[in-house]
Image (cartoon, rainbow, N blue to C red; front, side):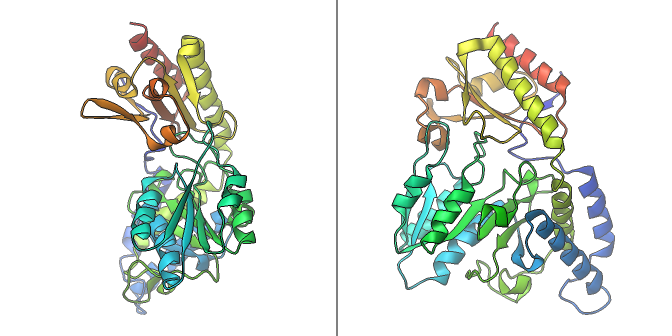
Length: 373
């Protein structure tokens, strides 16, 4: 059977147009972008052209874009950068229980360093209640970090309202937009955010590159100290090649028209599964406020990992893990209050540019063959 890739939220293939830009960059951008001689100039030009492409996607100024090694570094720079820039003062940080580990782990580290943490709950669809945020704000709140869209369920959070609440109390607002870039609008002024993280390999660029939007005037302590690269915000000689890849990917991501087709395929998958299994399949996440490419469903009475192991050739993700013979729900599903007997059957299907209607039909048939055998 031909393989079916339905795990685009985990990682995307490199777009052929990104690859082509990288090939050209390998020939032109081998010099050090910081060098002032003839070999450094082309690399510098590629780097800054790529920065403008990222800025165009976010509708910010190029100076507000810092290139990083990926979404995890961007998230760490946002969180630790705010904390260490305010060292010596009480720092309260608010986040949610459904964040990616690259948010939750730095928060745990900063708590050991003296920060006070609040983890907001979510409802059964994975949504944060802005009123919960308002009640959690204090005079010491320095930063609120809430992901734009959840990587497991696709639920899209009310970022605009939450950012407004943070600003009313004098706090900065960060959003992890790794899953939303290229799928829904991520214009920073519309969202009202001060910091926004991008992961290259979620948007058809290679792994090892990302970006952090830092609103002009926002003070962050660098994670990496050294020379004055990235306007003093991230030391280390920049890779014009990887920047070119991310810039090209972001230029492609400005066109969201393909998402309508992806949305139709997503709905085709969900409705096809619902028709086949009825009440034995449950949708996890918000039914409407959801990424156009993500379907997280639970096959009641089954285990997600067992389903994927039995269904030949489908790449997807589960919402549970087996530890010492015991099935454990993901922290996201647990925070949503999904019952154990439902959550252990969770499977996330995430679609992308390469997904076809034929593949959706084939996926439904393969799953049906296994679960009705």
